[in-house]
Amino acid sequence: MKKTLLLLLFAFAVAAAYAQKKTIVYQQMGPRLNKKTVEGIITETYTTQRKGLTFIWFRIGNDTLVHVWKKHLDTTRMKVGARTTFRSVKRLQGNLWRKEQSEIPVISKEN
Image (cartoon, rainbow, N blue to C red; front, side, top):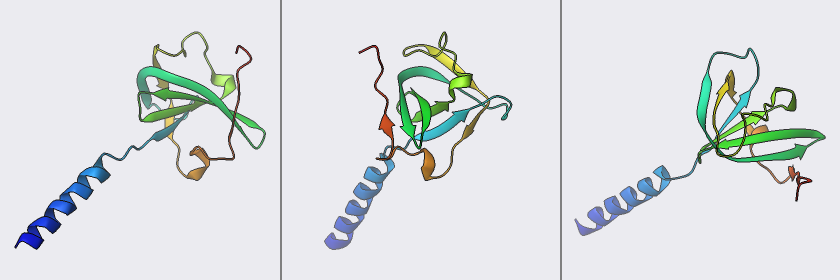
């Protein structure tokens, strides 16, 4: 009985730890994709490069990253600390969008 109870307690502990696992949702903004929107306060913005392309990323809260191409970038509204609505977004699937070692962070010229 004690072994069963101990095993059950261990299973609940593992399940609780797995439930707290941090997951990130990758989104892409682009005109005329659909009518979905993502709204929130931008907590971080950064750019990366991969295979000659520049990717601009906006982090909303702790769990959402929105990719915006340079031609769709609105620098007047998309700033850190600003509440922004990203219109016409779709969820990005696959490993291409996950941050990998092949991405090179772009250092801003302001520093």
